[in-house]
Length: 102
Image 1 (cartoon, one colour):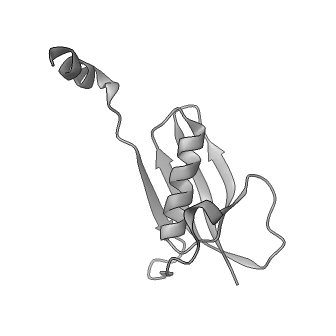
Image 2: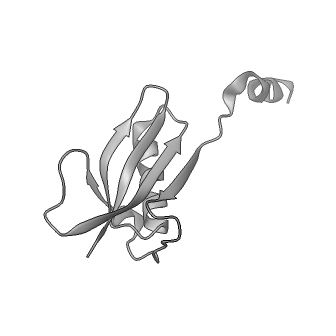
């Protein structure tokens, strides 16, 4: 038990979180796309007509796959259909624009 507590105190437990920032303050959208169906565009744009509805940020993990899943989850909850311009930095944080198809 002492080792477990020491592990937590020494920083073995890092809080991971994701946040959504809408492009327009009062604009909200209902969720309509499942997390696993959120499309990813690391570079370029989708062929379908879309609007950027906001930005998602996720922190703190050295696992880039986990960060992308956190971004996808928050995009789905926020009414998005895809993520565009995904960036993950060396500090374990990720950002992306949330898009919604017309």
